[in-house]
Image 1: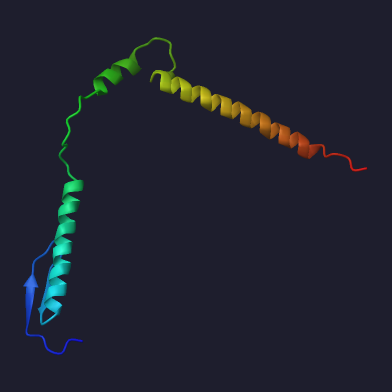
Image 2: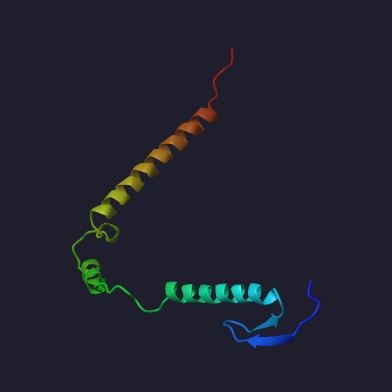
Length: 115
């Protein structure tokens, strides 16, 4: 419990200003909290950076040329073997799911007769 406050020290800190109470044990706790806050700010600035550390080759013009050429291949298959495999897997699952749903509807529509 605070009994006496010797002075109030304004500390400018991002993103807001804090008032640090300068008294016996409170100062060290508040200083640790301020150091942690400033360290968090530095970590945030490092991880959310607008500059790129790695420079990659811009592949957009190559992809535009690939997707815009008229070679009678559907657009959803122009991405390569991965697109073909995803398309076929989707078709198999769609047809299989439709067949299974129709089977379950038939089972539900014609229940077994109880003897």
